[in-house]
Length: 185
Image (cartoon, rainbow, N blue to C red; front, side):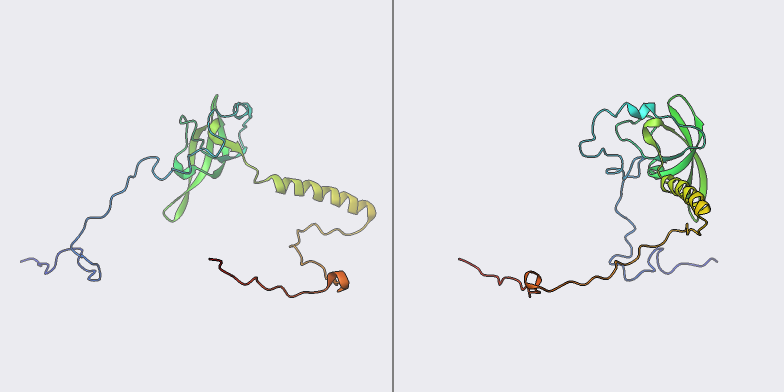
């Protein structure tokens, strides 16, 4: 003879107002669910997209940002990849293949997606680093010529330097209080 349950399944939570109710509110789980704002066009940016979008050159190894453009539905990336940065591994006539990393459970998986050029833009993530490399190289050459040591590490922003404020006739301290509220009826 088998074990017989004394209470129905799902009734372990007695703090729930109705522990026997197993019906929950439904919600749509379509391909573009929850993209009301992500895929919408910005203010004054609606309509035809700029032709310069098609004139940009993409090469294998370029770092690009995948940003879906709601005006073009063809070749649009899945919503998870919107805003992600990846590396171009393939270039075709009107699209590029991008290697991205997507979080699946507790790990990041490498994903390869093909996206049209309307949904891709060159990333500016390395811009500051590359300019810093150039300026540091120039500083090294200058330091070698002058024979001095140059600090190339970035320093955090220091507090402002001290200064004294003279309290003369035009600059006397005054106490400011709020104007009392009055009602006129």
